[in-house]
Image 1 (tube, rainbow, N blue to C red):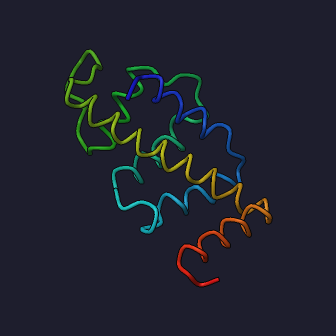
Image 2: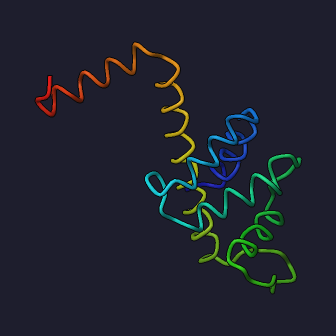
Image 3: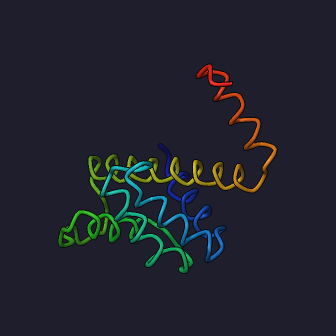
Amino acid sequence: MTPKNNHTIIAILRSFSTNEMIRFDRFVHSSYFNTDKKVSKLFELLSTKVVGKLTFDGHVQYGIYHQLMGHKMTNKEGKLSRDQKLFFNAKISLLVKLATRFICIEQIDNIPACESELLYKGLQEKKLH
């Protein structure tokens, strides 16, 4: 995952309406869609501490990482180690995947013809139609 994806999740979250954020919160906390507690916590941190702010630079990411992990910030420079970056980026990548899945499901719910077509195809594959 590239640093661009770190900003992608912020752009996606900022694009959600208040009602979409409420539904996405339920989605992220649903054990059917997400079993990673760190991803749930990351969403909480980003939605409360970053979405309304102007930047999501390395210093902000450093603070979010340490809150996510329950650590005290130890590096005075505010930089994540290589392993910390890999872990943080992996969790952000999972959150991006959840957000894109959420957007797809929202679209299916908003387009009845699409939902019917997908249901019909699924029933055919299961030999139920």
